[in-house]
Length: 39
Image (cartoon, rainbow, N blue to C red; front, side, top):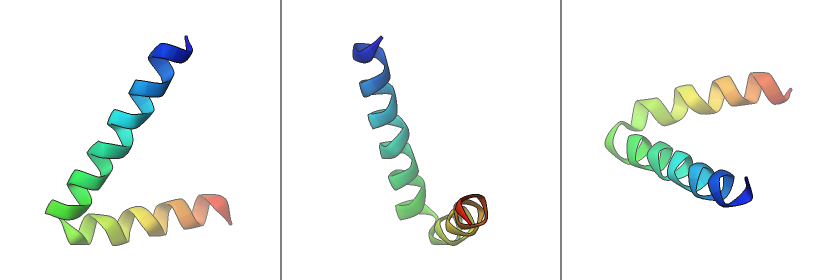
């Protein structure tokens, strides 16, 4: 399970970074959504 979870999260984070670098607006929106959830 660990072997599957670790690479999956890595790919997920990399995907978000790629989207952020390609679409700056996506970064702001994602931060707002995450911020609302955490708060």
